[in-house]
Length: 416
Image (cartoon, rainbow, N blue to C red; front, side, top):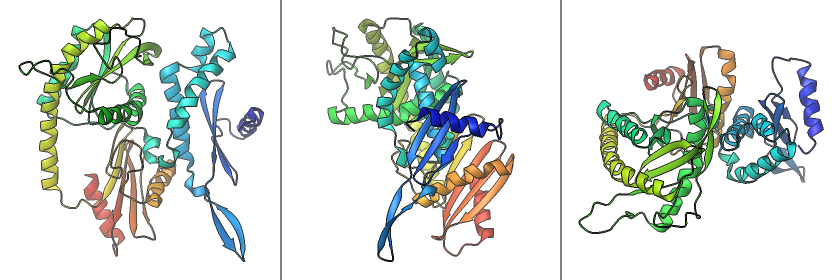
């Protein structure tokens, strides 16, 4: 809403009815306003237009607004994520005001600089239950392979004292991180939905040959910097920048350089002290160290994943039921409803079923700590939602002429 005073009036007015439960949404026929108290004394407001279809009745056209398509819990999560992403790159509102002597103009400039770019990246039409969870997809490895990854990470931090924390991903799945979960979930989302897809597109346009084909007798590797100098032979050092992020250590935000290095399907994120000046020589030494080690490690991880994929395809009996799983304790999520992590709308179910998953999630407040909801759609989809011990499990089954007993049996089998 353009009128800030009206937003404040709505929040203040609703606060008189229940001070313990803040107003988070206002429904009108044509719009949906969502409110989020990002910090003490700071509110964020997002206004969405309700989609509509044109219909004809008695020879007269009229607009029918599809208010059910805009789900409060989904888009409130999108609003919260926008603040978390701003805080990751710019710091908190309170800290910005404090550092500028309470100069509101400075805060406005940072807000304008960030959101003028960030809003263009939002894919609101593809927002769904995964935005509510904002979980992390982990890659389970056998003990030996996981130990090799952990040793590799420890070796990086021991060799380069500037590297304070490290995260390791393979195929957009997290293997190891030293970052706290609340910060990692924001960084993970930035990596898999923004930074890495953009880098992959650049690689596809420019090719993905090794960068070090010096001679047929020298070993080459496939490593390259995602954030950092694209060309290590460029002595000018003016054509690249490394993003800085704020990470909470012991509840105190600290500034770090986010250096991301990638080889084939593996990604290493290194968090380096923000006060340091990173020069080309540092990146060259880092590349010489990371490239060969990471290229070798990727082969081992890829071999493990291939064995797991072959085993899964052999043991799979009925691939038709799709599921979404989320564990609030460690923020782990897994989905076979979504065919990738890119938030591109590449899903295996209908939009109606996808909305039902978020609707069931919104109703979980009525189930206390445990509960189960089973729904059947007109198109013969069965949708089951289970809540137990801070874990949520949703199953989608498309089966004609099935009864409740059969669906419940498949649900029990799938959740084991």
